[in-house]
Length: 41
Image 1 (cartoon, rainbow, N blue to C red):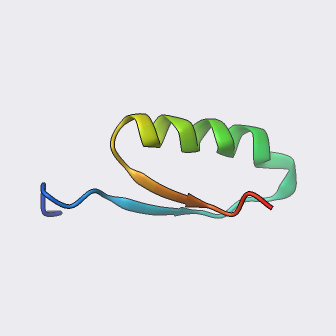
Image 2: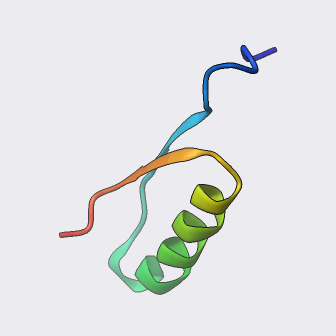
């Protein structure tokens, strides 16, 4: 079980065609206290 004091970190890997949905997921995760990493290039 993760330490409740440390935020969960997530790497989001995706295909170019999925970028809009992955960005939506990124924002949702941020709102829930997760630290996602997304290559925005």
